[in-house]
Length: 283
Ligand code: G1P
Image (cartoon, rainbow, N blue to C red; front, side):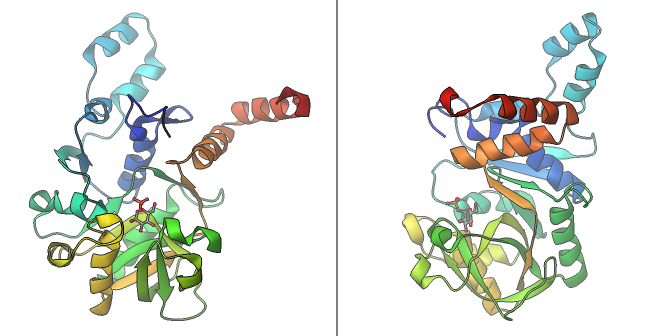
C-alpha cells in the first residue's frame, strides 16, 4: 500500500469512515473480548492515539454543537474494554509478535486478529457473526480455533493453508485439522482453505512458539507453532462464508471500501449513480 502508508500506519487507512483497526477492534469486542493488546512498532503511535481521548477536538465539537460526531469520537470503544500496547522491536514474524505479548497474557487463552484483514459477514447474519462464532466454538470445545476461507488455488503461496481431517466440511462447523503449511506453492498445497488471520488459542501455544526455528521468510511463523498444537489434537478450523478483504493490497482495500460504503443506503445510491454515469472513455 505504499506510498499511501509512507507516513501513516496501514492499520489507520480508512475503510469508509473509520480506520480499519477500529473495525477489527469492534469485531473482537462483539465476540466478547474485553482486553485488547496492540503489538506495534516505532512510528505507529497514532494507533494508540486513535483510541485515546482528544480533548482539544472534543472541546471544539462541543462548542460547535456537533453532538453526533462528538459521540462517535468519544465512544469509539466501551469503557469496560481495556487497551494496552507493546512494541515489537524487530519485524521477526507473526509468531514473534505474539511472543512479545506473552507476559501480558499470563496463562490465559487469547485471540489473534490481524488488522489488515476485514471480515464483512453476509447480510442475513448478525454483526461480526464469524468471529463470535469462532469464540463460541472455543467456549464449547476448549480446543484452539482458526478461521479459514476458500481462496483461488493460484493464491496459496500468499497464505497459511490447512488440510481438514475430513473431506467435506460445512460452513461454521468446527472440525479438526490434519495438516497446516505456510505459503505453499499451488502444486504443493493440500487444499485451497486459507488461514485468514483470526485465531483463538490456548496458552500452551507459547511453549511451541518459544521452541520453533525461523521458517518461511526467516520469520518465526505462527503457522509452524500451530502445527505443533495440531499434533496434540488441539486445533480445529471453522470455515466462514463471509466476504474477506485483505486490505494490505489495493484491490482488497478498494473492494472493502466499496462494500462497507454500500451498506449505507445513501452512499449506495450515489455509487450506483456514478457507475451508471461513467463510460469507458472516462478511464
Ligand atoms: C499471515 C499468516 C498466514 C495467514 C495470513 C492471513 O501472513 O502467516 O498464515 O494466511 O497472515 O492474512 P502475512 O499476511 O503476514 O504474510
